[in-house]
Image (cartoon, rainbow, N blue to C red; front, side, top):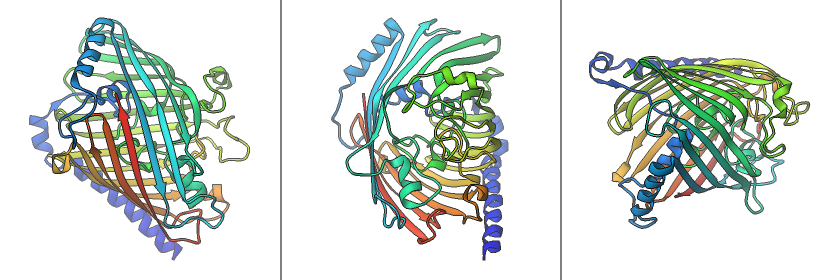
Length: 438
């Protein structure tokens, strides 16, 4: 039976890779002639996050912060170069069954704070330079699990939500961003406190505050990325008018906003996460594009976050991401291979991870999206001391623009064969998310 499962798993990987290739090369000859090639920003990039706060048509109830507030914010930017946003997020999850030694059957987490991007050099011009700063508080609520622990500790799976975690009000971003124009080429550098996932892995539905919740779709745990800490990153656009980009990042493996706060002293230990990505965006218009990228990464061991008792082994791998859009429909597929164990946030527990799915945008003319995704994860047997069973799952959600400034996202995850819980073969995890931002 185990051999059969391995064969099926291999077939799933091959099938999803084939889907990714199909998504991109269908209608290829048309795309070459008609698509204007441009670059797009990672959906978790601070400027994109701030800009997305501005209300868009299609909310259910026409109430909330009036438009003149956002007009005032535009005036502030035009006069001072300052963009800012304040937000509050809430995630509630429940489980149909939990592991025998579980403490909780429900998780509740909140995430609140502010972010600014202050363009101090060459505002509205080339070669602009900006300071990015944010502070957020993330914690569990009530007598419930913290969502970032819930999937692994209480349900017994090898993936969970990562972003709704537990740390006191802390500096997350504090870095300088500088754009430099080099003729037909543009390059951007960042240096300071940051997280790698805002420059690499640009899956458009990975914002777990409003879109997919589970790790493989959001903060991808199979890639051993660290959390916020000192880093340096770049993005190069080799040709004007082209959608080609090359990006890279180097980040301290030992950043820990919860236990260490704002602390760059761990950089001296020389333990880093390294990543390079090459990708292409075929852009037809605003929010209408196709994407293909290859990401290669490597992570050193870490010396924080219980390095002696939790998985902690250096290693690397690669990830291939493909997205294809037809009108309101977006199909996606992704494959990730990894040999690192534990990673910067201790949750890197799998060798192979596959995701695939589809999202429909603005269902019933309501601003938002409706998505369904499948994932497959092959655990690293060495971590568990024996051959561990593969885990699969399905997540579905509906992101709804309730008012001008409030989003709600009901959804559900189905987990099959949770790796760390051999007592159960199926777990249903419904959830509801809430976000308000101004």
